Image (cartoon, rainbow, N blue to C red; front, side, top):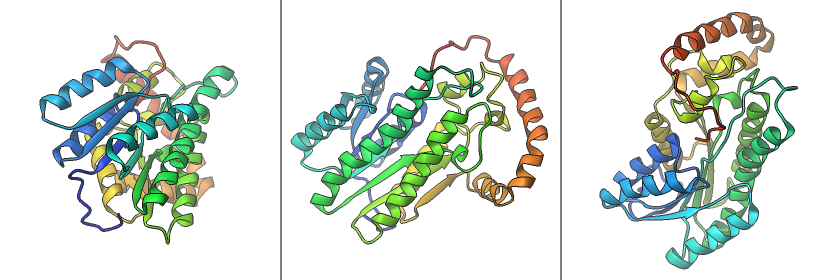
Length: 287
C-alpha cells in the first residue's frame, strides 16, 4: 500500500460524501484509473445522478445511502462491501458540512451537526476501516481536512475546530500506524468551488474563505490521488498556500495582526461574488 507507484486499477475504494463537488470529482478521476468505487452519501438523489454518469463511462460502482454520523450505518456499509468484494483497499473520508456564523449565534443543533458529520463521522469511518484493514494486512485511509485546520477561520469557528481535530486525529493515526502496512494521510485544501462554498457566500461571517479564487474540485481530487499514492502524512492543496498558512501560524502574533486586512479583502470578494450568484439556495450544504 505504501509504494509511490501504487495503482488504482481494480482497487476497492469507498468515497463518502460522493454526491458533492470534491467527492464527485474524485470519483470521476478514480474511475479513469480503473478503480472499483463504493460511493456513499446521505443525499440519495445526488448519489444516483453521479452513479448514472459513471455507469455511462463503464465504471464499476456500488451506490449506498449512508449517514457517516451513525456508527451503525458504518457497520452496515462495511458488511455490504466485504460481502461483495471481500476487501477494502482505500477509504476516502470526504463527507462534511459547514454552518457559518458567529459562535454565539449558531444553534446548538448546527454545532452538533458539524461535530457529528465532520469529526465523529471521520473517526467512525477510520475505526470501522481499520478493523478490516489490519485484519487483511493492507489498506489506506485518506481524511479530508482543510487549510482551516492550520489557520483559524473566524466566523466558522466550529467548522474550523472540526477540521483542526480531523488533522490532529489523522496525524496521530499516521504516527500510530507508521510501522503498519495500513496507511493514513490527511488532505488539507484551500476553499473549493462547491455548493458548500456558494452557501458560505450567503453569510458575512465567512470572510477568510474568500481571500482568492476557489480551487476547482478536480484540483482537490488530484491531491487526494497524491495522498493515496504517497507515504506523506499530509497533502496541502495548493502546496504554496499551505506553506504560507504554516508559516503564518509559526508567528501567530504576526498572523493575527494581518487579520483586519485579510477580512477586508474577504468582504470585498464576498460583495463582488454576491452579484454573480444571486440565486444561491439557502440551506446547509455538504461537499
